[in-house]
Image (cartoon, rainbow, N blue to C red; front, side, top):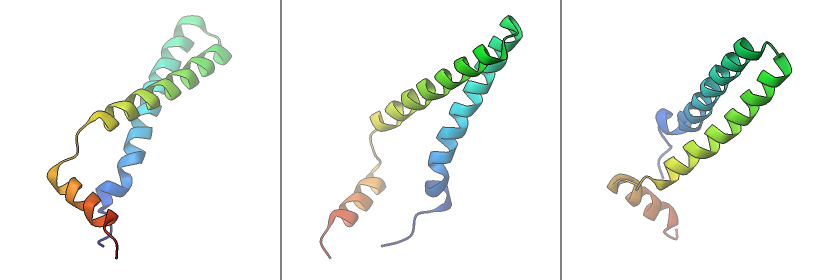
Length: 79
């Protein structure tokens, strides 16, 4: 069994980073419009969680490529 590539290992951090950027943008917009720090933190947190769940669902909906299917079959095979 081969070790995963660097891109495969960092993939979850890309998704979390994208959710963090979306949450920071939302928090900044709410902060500039309401000038209430607590409310902007709440909105940023809610947006982070919601975007993370939505992105995860989209990633799960993508069909794996042929190479990924062979990797899955190799991992499931008895040794």
